[in-house]
Image (cartoon, rainbow over the protein chains, first blue to last red):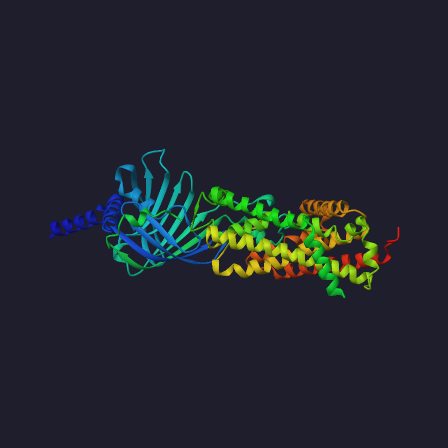
Length: 232
Length: 280
């Protein structure tokens, strides 16, 4: 009886600690690899210091491994990175070392931090942190620090595509460096704003872009020709 | 009699070759700008968005007819006053230089009506120049580049206006730009009443515009009290229609300042012309 209890304890203990950070990432990668392509309708809402733009509707096309296209009728502002870079980086295990970090509850979901440290010092990504919902094997939050584009934090919310690991909302938090245009460039020579609201806005260095995704069409056999069209 | 004399004054403007200089110069300048934007518009726009391109990407048709029309307006609004003053600065002094002012004054029409008819004729010419600017910048730009959202750069940052929300802004913008040009026209007519030759009022008008513009540009507190009263401060208020939200209070204030300038300058012109000695 004692032996049975001991074995059961060892089995449970081994089971709970056997899941390494890399194995969690492998499961996420596997889930991601199953998505060969998708198209999705997106509503982009940007709240960026010194930029005023109304929400716009776009169509996003994606095909493995890194084909990505945005179709919009008007001008739309999107983060420079954050759509495919992380998944592509995670797919190549030899490029990084994954280490578990703290646990954190994100919007009532228990998550675990995985620190991803690149093995090469000259790569674009300096450090990536992802908070993973281990029950559904999806990324709930990511924070990527890059050489050229600063730090981008992304919060993911999932809806009907949870099983496939496709988010319904992506909220990007972006570092925007202080923006001050010379009067001569702006041709606004007689205007000097002393509005405290505008001055406060100018000092803000973080912006958010919220992308609400709906009407996913997954694995429809998207043609490469879709991505060959000249970007407008 | 006023209308008939206005018609005569307008015929005089139309019959002068210099009146077509403005239209010709506008056509040439706008053609050059459109050609340059067609050839290298993307890099000009990327110069504007460069500050953000590190973290953000701008998707969609950035270089379009609306942007080109805006750029043209922005570039030319500085130079069009010269084209207007070239014609309106000659309206009274030209008559004095040629000696026809005496003949004009001998007609059964009051001096006040003579000045008003010249002012109305000048206003019609300025309107035609503004319409020509609007037709060339909007229609030709849309024909060459197509339509699209407008990305506007001002001292507070970038404003991106949706395509459907632009045309009325241009319409109102042109109205305010016309009012600003009318102020320049009235100033040159006023200076023309003081002069006996054409060059003086034209050069003086441009000199006043340059001096006032420089005063408005200098971020020196000593000028802060006079800046709101300079008409040049309000000449670019057409741009305010491309802000979000639109600062209607500022625009109304600019319109009032410009109208006050026009009224005062007409009053000075009337006073001077009524007192003018045309016998010598």
